[in-house]
Image 1 (cartoon, rainbow, N blue to C red):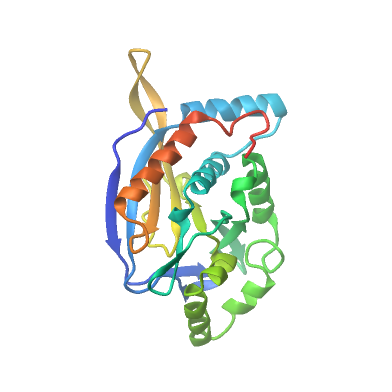
Image 2: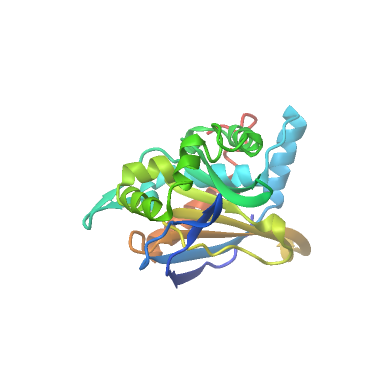
Length: 269
């Protein structure tokens, strides 16, 4: 797996909205938060080979998103500080479990809306288990036990001023925030475009954005060949994580992606 140089970007936030049930229902980031981004691309030919071998061996398919998310959770498990939440001004809470929130689009009353589904303890699940859980969440009816459960549905139907007050309270209590949002997030937008593309979110937590796949020239056995590369971006709250720890985390993440350790026959955690 070949890797290009890191690109680190910083962006200020004036507040972004989580679109669920209707646009701008919930302001999810603090007004003065700054988000730092780490961009890189990965050669996914080895990854696709591993997933293909698993499909031939077991008859079961695993999506690239599920595989990359499993690698992401494994990297977080090795450096839990990266998913810390601030409690007051002087304390950081680092969670043991890696709860990954996946953003997905669903149809609701004739409108496409963005909801999220949390895979709890993703670091202890296999890539195949994550894949099956996400597929079930995409098919589960809204307002049930999948994405946008009954309690969340009632929350989003509250008057806007009440929602904002409740969310302000939740956002400042790390344990409540973990229950509602998870400890990290994954979004995949690459299937909606062609060429080089990746999302730059302004996020209240650690987030992995899986971008598009494009063909690039690369050296293989001394020859120039065309290979598929995927664009990836890791975003964190700059008030909690500085650039150097973020790059070190990125190095650990890319080693896990390149190693294929989790692509054993059982796709074990």
